Structure formats: structure tokens, C-alpha cells
Length: 149
Image (cartoon, rainbow, N blue to C red; front, side, top):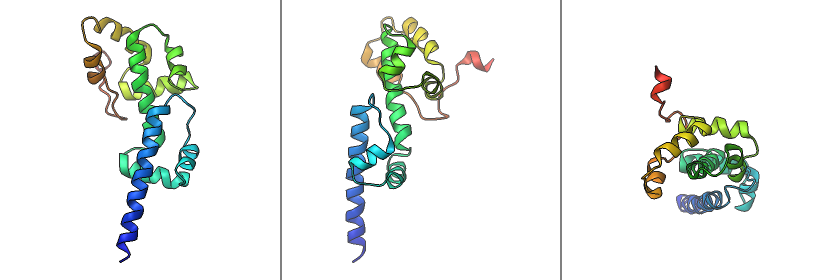
């Protein structure tokens, strides 16, 4: 009998986690922290972090930064904003943290990405560019061949 209440609680947690993920997707450019996200779904910050990692394979902060970097990639491909402007546009408050995380996920600094994207984007539809340039998780970024030599 005790498994039914546990299962029901697990389903409630999953629904709350989905709300948190959806909020991050919508409000990635806003100042968000785990405490505020947890309060929005009546969970403790620790419980939210543990459950989010179990459900999605990464912490809420890591998920937020991935969304920010994904949006930054699109803005950098557009080419009309500087790296600093893109950093603040996507909700990052530190250019250093933004550049470090961008490099971890994408495999190159944002300035290099911006330059290469402008060079490579000629003739590629934006829907294709978005799909083939999605950021990857930590330690999965491909290393440019120039760095291997």
C-alpha cells in the first residue's frame, strides 16, 4: 500500500520539475537561481536540485546555462551584436563566466564562434544552422583540429 503514495508523490515531483524546466526555457534571460525556482514549485532547493539531476541528467544551473549558451549561439550567428552584448542579452552577468561556459559547451570561445559562424553561414538556412550547432554537455565539445596540432 505504501508504494501508491510514493508513486503519486513521484508523479507530482515530475510535474513540478517539468514546470521548473519550462520556466527556465521561457525565462532564461532573467536572473534565476535554484532557490527562486524551488520556491516557485514549493520544493526545497536541495530537493529540487537532486530530483532535477535525476530526471534530466544535469543540475538546474547547468540546464539554465545550456539554454543561455544555445540562445547566445543564435545571436552570435546573427552577427549584429558583440560578444559582450550577447552575454548580457542572454542573462549572464559575468563575461568571464559566460565565455568559460560557452567554450566548455561549444568547444571554442564565443568570439571565435562568432567569426566562424559568419564565415560558414553563407547559404545555410537558419533552421539547419540551429540544428547542427546545438550546444553539447560538458566534456562533449569537439576540439577544433587547430588545437590538436
